[in-house]
Amino acid sequence: MRARRIRLDLALALLVAVAVAAAALIQQGSSASGTVTPSSPRPVAEAFSRAYLGYLDGSVGLAALPDATSRVRTLGAERIPPAARSGPLRLTEVRLSYVGGSTRAQALVVGRDERHGYSFEIDISFVGGRWQVTYIVPPDLATILATPARPPASPRALALVAGRFAVAYVDYREGSDSALPASLPLMRSQIGRGQDPLAAITPTHARSRLVSLALGPIVRGDVAAHAVVASAGTRLTVEFDLKRTSMGWAAWGFPEASR
Image (cartoon, rainbow, N blue to C red; front, side, top):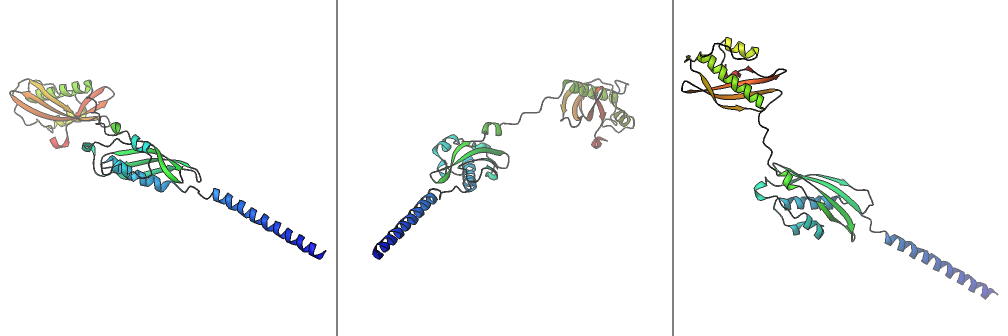
């Protein structure tokens, strides 16, 4: 009877040991299946971005792009033309969009050289136990490097007023016209006090004509004019400013340098 009890106790102990071992194996297997937890993709995003900026400005080749798929190397293969490069591209921003524990991330990247800014987007995926750049939207080089559009031509009304004033002013100083040219009070005052560029010329009483007119940019409703006027076989240069009023454009003063 006693021997039978001992055998039962041994069997029970053996069953308990087997159960404990099985539980341990199950727990170990569960832990092993989740041991590969994605870390932050930022180091991969920054390393790729620096290399890609180097590729854009011609300092490295496509093979030097780290953690990039072959598709990415194909999509991002266009380079900045040598004539458009302006010093090395510097990485200035990596704006990462990523939720901890996720296997996908996106990043908006910005780089700059001495003249331009270049931005591109990348997708990063956790594949084969590591982060890889799996997609890229390269910078739009055609738009970034496009030649700035020329400023629009000066309004026709402004050019007409400026040209007419220049001729009328020279005619007044040449003595071929006694009427003071149409202008705003400051300019009329400058002419009356002899603080205008042609105040000291000797009148020839010859009629004048406009040779050329150049207008500067319009800044807060004001614009500078540079006119060349021919009179009695001589070309005279007149510089003055115009102002936009409720009645249209009008000459309003000579620059301080001409006083």
